[in-house]
Image (cartoon, rainbow, N blue to C red; front, side, top):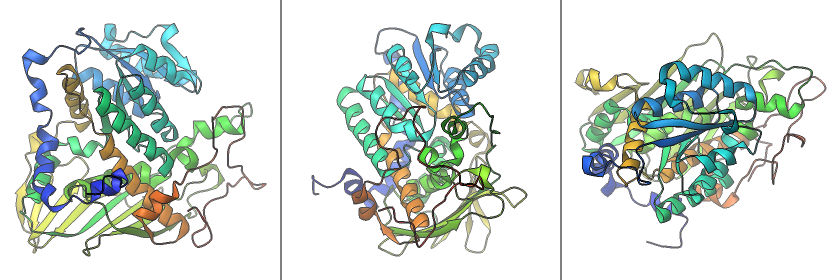
Amino acid sequence: MNTNAHPIIAASTSRRGFLRTSAALAGTAWIGAMDPARMAHAAGSSTLKLGLIGCGGRGTGAAGDALGSDAGAELWAVADVFPEPIEACINSLAPKFQDRIQVPRERRFTGLNGYRGVIENCDVVLIACASRFHPDYALAAVQARKHVFVEKPAAVDVAGIEKILEADEQSKENGTGVLAGVTYRYHLGRREAVRRIQSGEIGDIVAIQSDFLRAPYRVVERRPEWSEMEYQFRNWYHFTWLSGDDIPQSLIHNVDSALWALGDAMPDHAYGMGGRSTHFQGSMGTSFDHHHVTYEYADGRCIYASCRTAAGCFGSNKDVFHGTKGRCHFAGFQAPYFTDLKGNVTWRADEASSKRSPYEQEHLEFLQSIRAGRPLQRAKILAHSTLATVLGQLAVYTGRKITWKEALDSRFAFPPRGEITMGIEPPVQPGADGIYPVAVPGKTQLL
């Protein structure tokens, strides 16, 4: 193997030989961490100090899952761009965890530099803020020798993914852990299904259908005292320079499941289509509301992936793996099942294990691995899956067929360059009609 190859390209060359073991490793690598003789925290304390960056719904949920999975964990510091989410987060968690919410006023940090206070004060940093900042904060935490949970996506562009790969290398050098927020890999029913897929139970996978069709995220109404920058930060899901758009935000779960089952082998190229429909008015920022991406492998296998954000429409979150002997059916957190080519059910995952929350499972495994001194290091998994979605997003925006190498070599980065502060002008502005500019497939040039 060419040791000078890009780390993602190098990883993608491993495929068939990896298939039979990757699912088993995903489910068992942490089991050794449960050895009672090794359950002491590496720092010599039974308490793990958790720090949260991003106190919205995702961040509050992540903190709750981590606290619920480890009785020795305490929420020690928090940060958010704005003060209101901090208070809402603490008020939400305090009734359930009581004396384990140890966040006095001096450890509640606001503003775009608040993440530094969390990193300085905590053992484990949970990152669930605007996705634009995931790679910078993750890399800073790993460099400070802190363990990190990074919510998906890892980044919004290729430049950010390169920082996640740097964090991956750094974590392996200094022994820190990185947990990737690709939740389906911690669903026990899916783990068993992927193990069976990789053992050949439904034959060779020839195609995968992935759907994530949902209602739009909430829009926070503009207030006259807000600057344009503050308005965009409060609605960051709807601005591509902060969120990456809906393929990285939503479809990443489905794409990650497909890559996982295929042994994390990368497709050769992607092309797609998407745009804005009448459901999105000017207040919906710069995001598209519908996307479709076709990922093709050199051997002819395809992943057909679609997402849509529209009110009053059919909703779906499912993945169907088409094999030469049968099919695997995934639907959110439900128990997966197999059918033969005529649709007869041939296997169904255990209902009880499938009902266990994968959100809790991922933090359980991560914190146990830290206490055992063998922290999970999953940054590269998240980098791969994120790059797949960024590749798809670039293909949709430009209307072009784009290869992995083209995407990587482009080092594509959303503006603005340099430090972002609330005092600068955001990279997009609404027109006189209040509508923000969006990409135009066939005209937009990003590479």
